Length: 113
Length: 113
Image 1 (tube, each protein chain N blue to C red):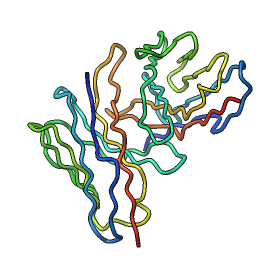
Image 2 (cartoon, rainbow over the protein chains, first blue to last red; image 1 turned 180 degrees about the vertical axis):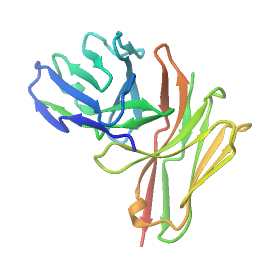
Image 3 (tube, one colour; image 1 turned 135 degrees about the vertical axis):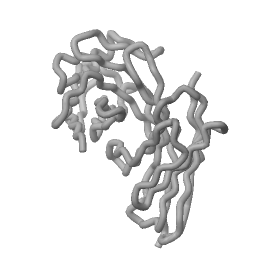
Image 4 (cartoon, helix red, strand yellow; image 1 turned 135 degrees about the horizontal axis):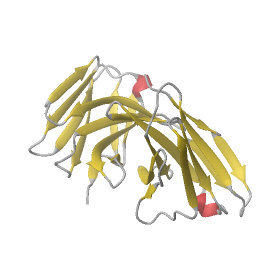
């Protein structure tokens, strides 16, 4: 099946620093990738849709200057949380679209101190 | 807007069948999905059903779709302790950038031996 990886799986950072999370489709090319955020015991909330070679489309309420998304190739999308604050602590999950379904990465847990 | 509702908890005994129910609002959804999430992990695609089908069976999993009532269910036969997890129902929808997913809040399945 289609495999999606994320790196890092865990990150702890100081408030005010920026963190980059990578999402890769390992055995297929994905023109569209998605970034979700999940709070404890909550559902996944779509943050943005990323199409290769174009600007990401952000959902309402998501600050595009804070959550920078780059989808430079068909197998890699990155999410950069800029000037992270404790309220940005969350579980970030990416997915890549293939064969009419979305395949999810294992998630990145971000803790901002 | 689009919305997906699920019951939050289900508790069953090992060997019994589990039925997780879901209702959705967007009648134009092309596909409906069931994902499984184990603690601290990403989402694993279990199965999906095309909107013009009313049933799909895949080993121990049976998906029933009542398009008229916008009701989707996942039946797990011979439930095992390894099936304990959170199960998310999701419907597809078109946003500006492509086809994204809206998730329910997830049903926590607890299987006791």
